[in-house]
Image 1 (tube, chains in turn brown, cyan):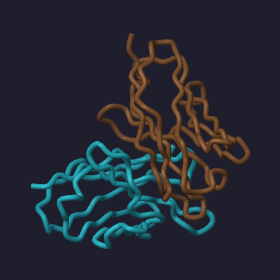
Image 2 (image 1 turned 180 degrees about the vertical axis):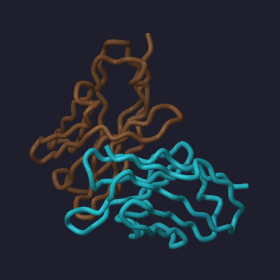
Image 3 (image 1 turned 180 degrees about the horizontal axis):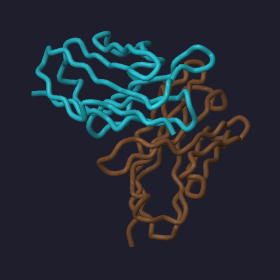
Image 4 (image 1 turned 60 degrees about the horizontal axis):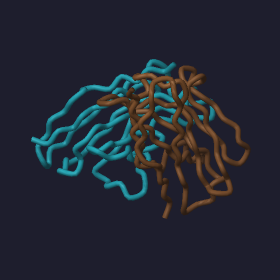
Length: 119
Length: 112
């Protein structure tokens, strides 16, 4: 069974960084690109970017290029997103989602991680 | 970026009623490979989104067949034939034809 297990809620001070994880199981981690999606409180979905765990290649939406850094550890089948220079605008839930390139779809999603930026 | 406009923003339905949600794109979503990468997702309250439909009309495995998708180019529709209580939540369309990937603003389905 495919599962994406994300880390727990985070609280970060303005100007600091947080790093959240997404541990994959039930499939070969390097066979699928991992995407990250942001959902601000009460708002819709916003694509952040993707990482190909096999090659470490990444792509980001323009507005997240200086905000997010995507990495992956193939030894533990875990993808990470680091958010830097936190502001109140970063308070949101962050989802990882597996990307099936054969059918161009997000077929599995993590449960989401709530990041709260507060002093 | 491609803008996806969903209507209506909210929808109230009784159990058994059939409803439709529209998603209109600011650009054609027909890819150069001949496919159209428009997907539909449902986010139930307090849950992560789940895939319902991919490539306009393909039902994801395990999704009830009361859900169906149709459309082409810039106009797409999700239909629920006989709403059930578990269908409440927010429905999103999502396009993956053009970079960056974008989502519609969502349609909230409420059960009367």
